[in-house]
Amino acid sequence: MINDLINLFFPKACAGCDSFLQSTEMVICTQCRHDIPLTNHHKTENNEATSKFYGRIPVEFAGALFHFQKKGIVQELIHKLKYKGHQEIGEFIGNWYGEELKDNEILKSVDLIIPVPLHRKRLKKRGYNQVTEFGKALAKTIEANFDETILIRNIYTQTQVKKNLVDRTSVIQNVFGTNYSEKHYNKHFLLIDDVLTTGATLEACGSELMKIPGAKISIVCMAMSHL
Image 1 (cartoon, rainbow, N blue to C red):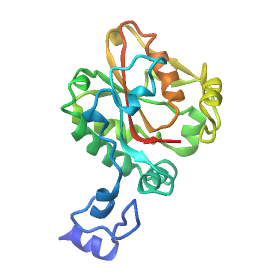
Image 2: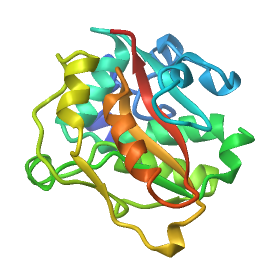
Image 3: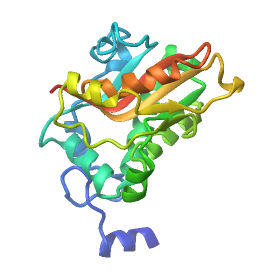
């Protein structure tokens, strides 16, 4: 009853369209959830996300939950998560995708979920890594562990949004490093990020993780862009 009164006087807004949420709705309204374009990558082993990494790094599985479209609902969600402090969006997407992925046979062997790290300068400025809550929710749902300590970002880089694959690859080399021990040998790592575009950042992170003896890599993102 108290929650009902709070919602009456301080109604929560949908993160997708800013309309008021009903008491039974969480983070986004029913209409936005219906309208969000899903990839269904988890239903196809050789999907468009996996093909991004052919000949670049070996991946067991790659996928994203949403298609990212400019001026669409997904862009609005990612923007609010990344720049407006709405970390509940990451948790919401992680729970959603986790339910889709928990029966994926390839991902049942995942040991650790590893987020693409932020440089300490950007982390201090933003206050959080936008994929942390996403990763924690995924970990809980697929019964894996979440670890932010293995992969590190050594070099601060400017935003990569407007760069093409060649430009991104040249900038991203030597940016990341690893901090691991023997307990991380022969593990299946699930590398996560917000949006898969060219894949250059994820390739660089995956290459670092592959330096760990016996490592296997899978990749999961909230969304996939088709730039």
